[in-house]
Amino acid sequence: VVKRFRWVAGFLLFVSLASGTISDTTRPSLELTLDGYQVLAADFHIHTFPLSWGVLSPWDTVIEARRQGLDVIAMTPHNLTGLAKIARWFSRSFGGPIVLVGEEIHSIGYHLLAIGVTNRIAWRQPSRTALDEVHRQGGVAIAAHPVGPYTAYDAEAMLKLDGAEVVHPIGVRDETTAVQLRDFYFRRKLTAVGDSDYHFGPMSPNLDQMGVCRTFVFVRERTEKGILDALREGRTVVYDRSHVYGDPRLIQLAAEDGRLPKFALTAPEPRVSVRLAGILGALGLVIWIATWKSAWD
Ligand SMILES: [Zn+2]
Ligand SMILES: [Zn+2]
Image (cartoon, rainbow, N blue to C red; front, side):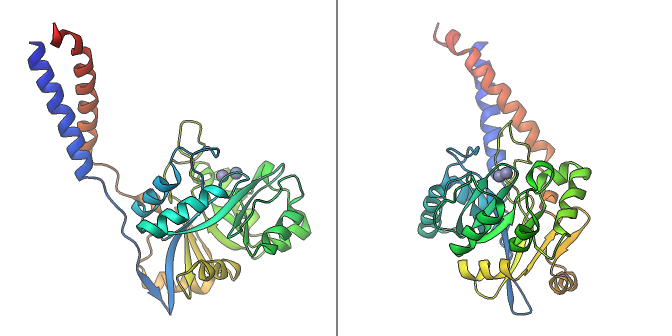
């Protein structure tokens, strides 16, 4: 009887692995050109392992970004820049998205994304001077989740900011927060950015899907410089479930064309059969382990 159980368990495990693998969907890259601009899907706020509340290594991050159809990612560890350099090397060597080196300046009163910088920036300083340092290094500065305790930008800092996360998982989960993100964005003409703030894990306040919130960047050239220029000049379009933000002319262009995917959360969920197979597979594994000893008696 135990032997038969083990056969059943093995079969269940096999079926679940096979169906999971077959149904694993990859989001295709956009390959879209509108009015002479290449439209790239980007996520500018991604954490990795180690030291940054992520579980994916820099190279797994690159693979996952490709799977999510992202053309551009910025790796933004808390107060670090080295990991992104590993990811960039990996992506260039084995094929993958353009990786921008960045960091999330994790200060008191504000979190600031420094995109396209070379060296880490001291976090013990007011946002106004941190912004100067980002620009001195040739980078672009984006206010990360600017709500509640993350809004320490005085009038001078507001003028120096390049962009703000107007779409972020915290807003997708909670409408009051969504309104706060929107209010910050509309304080001044800032570049609209949508990011996933990807962490992964039970402690994560976010949605555990890279690129779930994303930014469509309209570039003249598919290079790091082309992307940074587009961010400086506000050439982005960002969707949440019911709104769109960004350059009005580009929003219009995208609407007329109709091919830009509106919101990444609408990704196909795994089919019920696949989920069932997963549960059965887990059950199979439990039976397999539980009968391990008796199989050798
Ligand atoms: Zn943050
Ligand atoms: Zn973050």
